[in-house]
Amino acid sequence: MAKELRIILGIDPGFGRLGWGVIRASGSSLSCLGYGCIETHSTEEFATRLALIDRELALIIEKYNPTDISVEELFFAKNVKTAMQVAHARGVVLLRAVNHCGNIFEYKPNQIKQAITGTGSADKKQIQFMITRILALEKTPKPDDAADALAIAVTHSAYIR
Image (cartoon, rainbow, N blue to C red; front, side):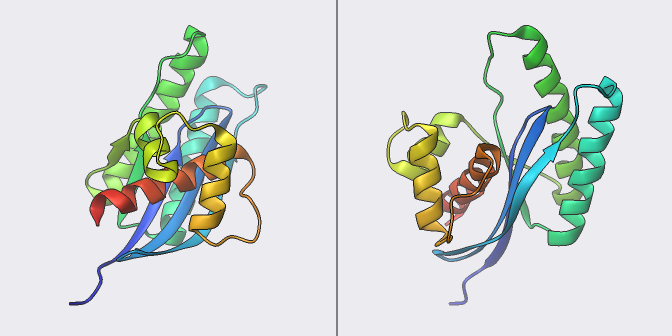
């Protein structure tokens, strides 16, 4: 039986910095195709920042043509203004993802931690260490948002096997 090839884009939603990571999954074989962050500047207007996220995400989707897009579910923050901004950015991501793939896959932070490290209470350093090992990377993906996005993509690959 042939292994189904999937190109998975993982997204760690954010407003100032949105992490993205793309992996190739074929059965249990995983490899990293790319990762990075979309950064917006606090000096720009709110709508301009959202438009930048949309444009940059469109370029990433065009380049890698993912079969699946996975996104971390929003968690509640203490700062309501920040939570609202992230929610708006996440809305841009969800719309772009649905328009490309027809659906998206969402994972809670503890699901991601569990899938990557075996415990739902892992910290960022544990996630980074495991992502570097799982994807056989020469160095730890930086910034943290990019490593988190790769973790989201790897989590999705575990759920679709």
